[in-house]
Image (tube, rainbow over all chains, first blue to last red; front, side):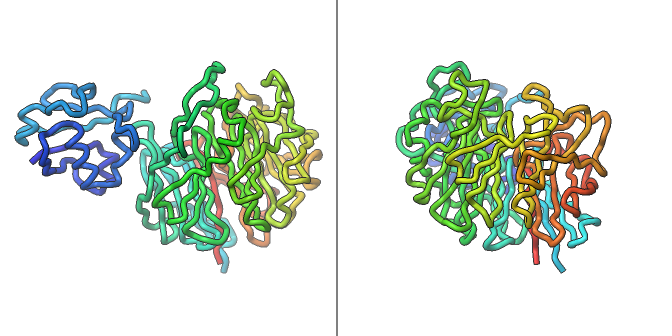
Amino acid sequence: MIRVVIPAHLQTLARTSREVQLDVTERPSLQSVLDALESAYPVLRGAIRDHITLRRRPFVRFFACERDLSHSGPDDPLPEAVATGAEPLLIVGAMAGG
Amino acid sequence: MSSVRVLVGTRKGAFVLTSDGKRRDWHVDGPHFAGWEIYHVKGSPADPNRLYASQSSGWFGQQIQRSNDGGQTWAPVGNAFAYDGVPGTHQWYDGTPHPWEFARVWNLEPSLTDPDTVYAGVEDAALFRSVDGGASWHELPGLRGHGSGAQWQPGAGGMCLHTILLDPLDPQRIFVAISAAGAFRTDDGGVTWKPINCGLRSAQLPDQDAEVGHCVHRIAMHPSRPNVLFMQKHWDVMRSDDAGDSWREVSGNLPSDFGFPIDVHAHEPETLYVVPIKSDSEHYVPDSKLRVYRSRTGGDEWEALTNGLPQRDCYVNVLRDAMSVDRLDSCGVYFGTTGGQVYVSADAGDSWAPIVRDLPSVLSVEVQTLA
């Protein structure tokens, strides 16, 4: 079970709570977790990463275990604590706009 | 008794303002989509309870919301806007080639006859259509592909397709306007397009009467005379009597011919409204007075409408989509400001009153006249 914390605006959009729990059958990576998130909440497609290129939107960040994973490769394994559900993957709207 | 529903898009959400036909007492509902930029909300002429809203965010991109109950409840629909084929390039601000990149939907224009068909004007400029109530979107690529697309360039607000006019007498004819490319027309339902900018002159272009490159801010028509078009250009108010084949300036005695919105009285096809703005760098009203100007002669001769509007210390702007008219017997005129006010005139502009004074900066105002 992977825990994902999503930002307030996307909670409203997806009509869900702050933290969602996902079954990820593949080895947990940013790509496999986001695939599972978008499968569970299709309205989030395009809101976190581009529809076509699947690149992270510029003002979205991925944090976990006090590390910034935003620039990790899409298939890089997530930290063990995220993979085991001990820690959540945080999807964060970047500081922007003053 | 008739009533009106005013759909207001702002920098931080959408608001639905309702009143009876007297237009004195108002109910304010919102914000819907709080915190998101709502570039446009518009209802279907074929089913007034079907509304579409463009919801966007610098963080989380584009959403399209749909309501089937007049704005009481909303649901997100499709938000995938993929350009047809290889998008190619347009000019960037510095004149270098820049790949076409989708940024947001500026304008939504529902079909006049089918609530499930809706057009979307987007940045970077292109026209999309949905025929399934917004669930999926497909570009009409003939517009970008007609030959001049590589020469289009963004205005300060981005390279946006911001105006879509559907000809009520000819379903194959559509007009669009793009900043900063100009106006375009299709006569075959969107398959092929041609620029319709003959007569426009823009000092910002090396060839001032170039075929494309003009920063058209808004075009408007009266539904009874779709061959007569009115345009607020970056500078200049223009008129065409031949569906855009040629234009002539009708700025006349306006204190400034810079501005954004232009609209036509619901029952008088020669009565126009504009809001002059001081200049392209001073985006506020001239002389610190908020004045709508009305022409009853199809342009050239304009009168200032000031009754009920602030006439001192006012420095707001009125954006291109932020003016609309209702269709009640005494035509109502509405506009919203960057200061968050939405004004109504229930007597065609003779007198004005604020509906609300303190919304977020207003991006768009549309009015539905309900039975």
